Length: 159
Image 1: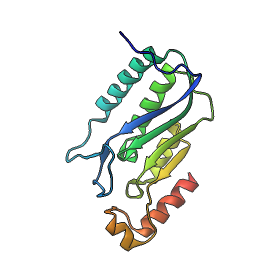
Image 2: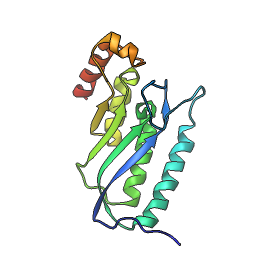
Image 3: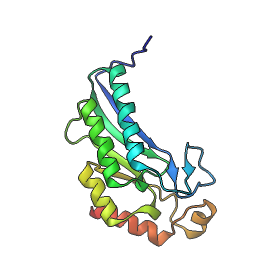
Image 4: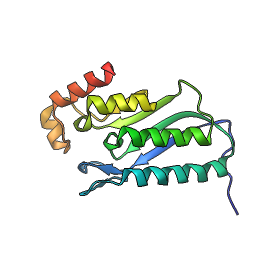
């Protein structure tokens, strides 16, 4: 027996990328440090399969927002993000202009990568700055410092 999910007209899609460069001591989320590269093509195919499975459970619906969280989704290649966002659009109606958010760690911010996310359809970045004090950032186990956080904010605004 297949359970049908909520049939309200719109819904948000959450995509979880569970990988991080380092595990922050305060983090209770499902996140893992990989000591070898993630097979992103394989992971993208798994997301495509999962989204198609969910489409059969939800039926035709309209997506109101997409959130790529984690972990550190900004460790994904822009091509991986594009594949996942395309899979969402293949399974449901995705109106133009909806919010598409990607969580990013300031230590994984790069201009080329952010431009690739923009081209893939990301229109909002949630930067995990956490603090603008180097002592606090070290206490929190963050990989970036204040200067890197401010550079990441500036880059996100620019793109």
